[in-house]
Length: 387
Image 1 (tube, helix red, strand yellow):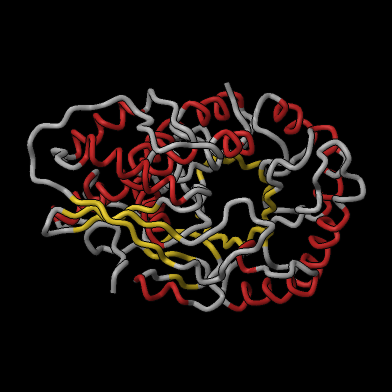
Image 2 (cartoon, rainbow, N blue to C red; image 1 turned 90 degrees about the vertical axis):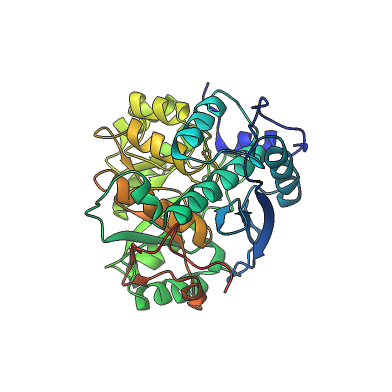
């Protein structure tokens, strides 16, 4: 049964540190260790954001190599750490790490239905294990799966939500000016935070529409993607579709909860529809794809289960639907998403990237030029978390 991302988050608000998955026994192996790192979000956060906070990184070490996974934005980092400790202690500390055993573990866990915090905890552990495995082999993560890729760089669209402090028209134009100056061709914003009542949006949606008109007028050459955060009901959203079409938006993202109502939305607009950023596993993405409810799906490596489950979602939709990983986050999830694109360049056409006004993320080894993220040939994710 489909569940909206808002409801998923609400259901996780009272998460506990109890183990959310069935126990899987482990044989005696070289012991691994788990540590937690916190990387301050360089642009901070604004109270209007639903998912906010610094970047939470898991570090799994074997005494020689260390692998990193990102578990940011569960909205409960404290509980996420405790859940991760339990998962790690019971099934990972002496795990016999190989591509085969990791895949088998993913397949068993795919039958589980963790809450959002637990899903994020496992996703972080999973990413770290792939990074560790690739570093042991001294290859980039994508090379664990195939010898060559024709991907050199991936197109980015930058999301500006976490760069906005006052969210005025003037600040929107200032920040988008910085986006253009850094060479990005596409950006995403979410200017409809004043919409509170889904069924009564006539007045509250005006600010968002005016913001979009102002930005489009000031920057006509930039493509604009808009996230509506499920703030509308289907009927209330249909009323503003003509105005959105007049703005020639690059895509619209989740105006209301994902489900069969999107069949009607696709009949009412020619705009590209993107959806599915917080789901665990493949089944909800399969429903979106088979129902043809959206043109683009957005699995997030931090919540979908990790790197392997992200690949399964992309493989499931191969030749049927475009994939653009959700990624308003830090350098680990960005690198992991890039490695997924390296394996499926025909499916992954773009990646979300948190706008870095101060260009501080260069310290992690990310190479971003003119709106493109370049693939590294360094081992693991190819980035430096601890300098």
